[in-house]
Length: 294
Image 1 (cartoon, rainbow, N blue to C red):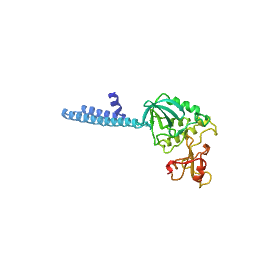
Image 2: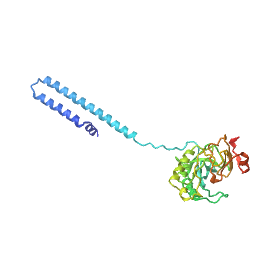
Image 3: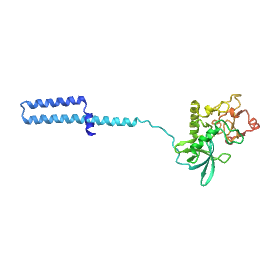
Image 4: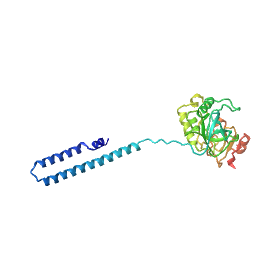
């Protein structure tokens, strides 16, 4: 390998120079010149050859290093989201539906609701089984049932049903996002727990564009509503700025300008959510004031 590197360092141009030096030395030898001077001339030639070779090897080595560096820096580096090292590592003992699981923590079974997403209903006694709900449940079961997952908390610990609110990690895969990416769930914001909401919104947009899962299987009447900007404005009276939101648990909560979650709350009228002009109107319709408005 060492000889091949040396040979590769001697270029055709360099070889021509070396041959010329050699021919000049042979001509000098045929001339009537004292041996002492001949030895001196031979030494000069040798020094010239060594100098040329040294320069060539130096350049060759530099080129080799440059090429090796180019090989390393040319590699594409893929940015991946890593699972947090904190958070509980637990076993999933049962998948309830597409966005709810039961896990075992310290010998106790806890119900866990996925943060930031919503899948079609299959077990809510108040609602019929929704389009693609069964498929979403099966997919969630395929992904996590019987496996060890890591739970990541955002801001809120539990919901009104005492379920833990968590992001679910299987190794470095964020299951909440995986379900949205594959078209089994939609992004749904639950302020103040919005750490990965931008990822979920982008994942839903891509799934919609690619017509994956529920975005193809369900009709416009049964498919989940589109993601709407957080800064959405009223389509009716512009003075009606109170947002009447409905949580995934069915609770009706209204948000006023200046409330902590107002800018992050979206209104999806296809889900029965509404804009109100006054608090009295919202309360009469059955909505309560958001806790962070006080």
